[in-house]
Each structure stands twice: as structure tokens, then as C-alpha cells.
Figure 1 (cartoon, rainbow, N blue to C red):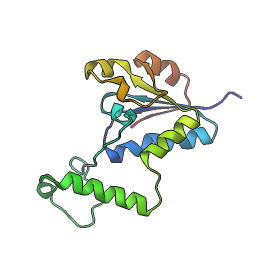
Figure 2: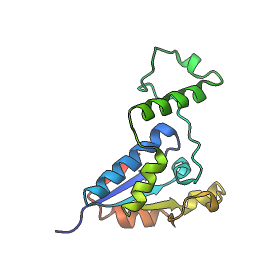
Figure 3: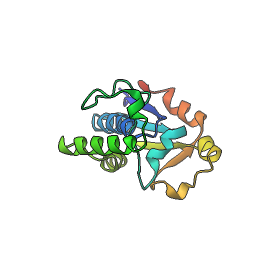
Length: 155
């Protein structure tokens, strides 16, 4: 029996959307899956050495809030920073690993981290800002792996 494969496309660059690809990839790798995360568009933020990700409830009505808050209040200046601080405190108090720790765990487990070269070029990103060990490729690179994967997730 051949090794199972998991392919993930990471497209979001916010704190709350950064956790799922790394949690799922590290878990799959621990279970013996050959795993790849393809980072494209705003998901490329997750590959930066210095992570300064924010969380936003705007456009995410399912986000649990400590108290009901109208959208207009959520859009006020400073609310995004406050919500980010609250989310980080909550994760720390519950013992959730940091993004940096999860990302390192993925690398230690040999999860392939592939940055979309087209998006890097489009946004004129400086690859020196990315962590070591990142590979670069286009959609064809992703499909080469995903075409043989048992599970493919779009996050």
C-alpha cells in the first residue's frame, strides 16, 4: 500500500485562517501522510519570518465574540488590534501552540511548503522575508502533487 497524501491550498493571511493549514498538515504528517501546503495570494503571509497577522471579524459572522457586537462597532479603528490581542490571549490560555511552533513542527515533519511563484512575482514579494526551506512553483507544481493526493483541502 502506498503512502497517503494530503494537499492543502492556503489562501488566507489572517491570524484565524493561519491555524487550519498548519494544524491539519502537522497532524496528517504525524499520521504518516505525505503532505504539501501550497501558499498562494494572501496565504503567502504565513511564510514570512516575522509573522504580524491580525484577526478580523468583518466578513466572518461566525466568529465568537465575548459579547454581541454590531458590525459597525467592529469596523471602528482599533477594533481589529483589540480582537487580535484577545484571540492571542485566548489561544495562549488554552495552551494552543503558536503559529511559529506549528510551522516549525510542519517543517520537522517534512511537510512541503510551496510558495506560488506567480503570486510572489505579482505582489513583488521579497523572498528573503520568507522562512528557510520554502520551495517555489506554480499551479502545475501543485497539481502534480494534488493529482495523486487522497485528500485535497482549500483553506
